[in-house]
Length: 639
Image (cartoon, rainbow, N blue to C red; front, top):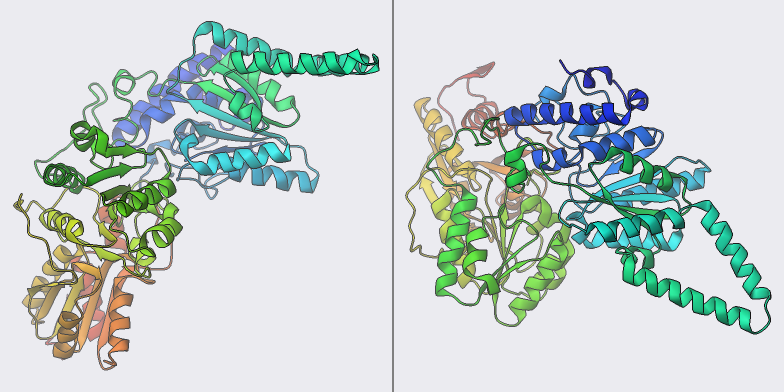
């Protein structure tokens, strides 16, 4: 039992705690974070770094009347613990449990749903402006990390907020920079003077006196202003934010609760936008996370004593196969360059970055820039690969369409985490990529059935003279043999995996394996089901699909993507265009909803993306005798 945390059912309970008690509470919270995340997986290092900051925020401000917006939100675990979710914290990221990100449906203290980076200042400014228009007085705070500040959207919001001059507090959680003690002390001294109301009153009185002195007064005043600005440029590290219209406070020790409370109190009473620069240590309090914060940024279940992840297999992940293939291809082709948006490890490019330093570009959290940068490189004859998670490429939609596809430039998009991702939930599932890329002219879209086919598709993309996207899932491959000298695939060429006489299952990407198992189950029940691996979502292998349609008059499409505008839609559009109207099409995929967090296997089962789900869908469509629960009793199907 925790001595202090058990007393906290809402942030209001923090108000009675002394600084010393808060320090002990912080230690308790770190123990719970490590214990819980070691079992559930999650974002450990970011949360360990913001324990004191979160406690100080909730002691100074009055949530939910005062609004706190967490950028990305993967550092909100401490916030959840002290806002009434302590008893459910063990369900973190589990199906039916609490989310790993802020979620308004969970708590009134979660002001804004987040999951992607660099959005908090824009959202917070919107809330602040709504407050002003309503004539209300509460505080609005955006908490953003230094990594998220590499996103252009953050600076767009800073620019607008500084221009408007409304009351807004931005807390910059910096877990990378370090500033020497004397500079920090001087900056703190200057900040205390500049935010003290007496300072402003004295400054105004001095200006009034100087203006009354004929001739010399205004000249002296201008000279003093120039001297003050010069000193600030030399001594204050936050002049960029000052020039954007913010009062800069900091840097502040993000693990000293007393200092944090003092600066937050000053910011709370200050008029106009304020930026507080807080220095924290990612992974603080758990040695393995302090030593390797990147690994513990987002991690699966691990052994608490050693920090070693649990489970494991000799089968490589799709990410690892992509990374190794990139290195192999780059040795042969000096024109290949790799671009990532702050995720070299997550996208499998660490080895590429080490071996080809001059051909590797990490642009920070700036997906829009990454895509147009790649377009410029492709324009000059290079073969750029933008390695990115499917859900994050959504942020660069216009750049793909306008800067790449309109000019038909040979940019390769390696879309990791395509399909259901799992415990990170709706902001991270890659369920929209087939639909948002398919309408773009000149775009070629591939989805491999296994890790070896991924290699072939990478080779295909490099010999293709135009934009190409390869969409593959998170996690391990199927375990097939790897051909390390793969042959490219002819653009638009599908694969007949198994012929059938009653129906064909057209299964996009890794759904091919589930389709094969479903076909075997149907075969045992007297239904001859063929399986096609389309390989290309665009362009389709039209001849193969039409042949299947005309042979059986019954097609089932399966995709780990939203049904709207996806692979199944493409098949139906083909049949409509070719006026093949007497074919029954059953589409299996994600309905018109956002998918919550949960184990990927459970989510696939829920939405019918399993062999059993495919069999049930076929049974319902063909009315095969009857369905009793999950058991289907089959008779012979008719086409």
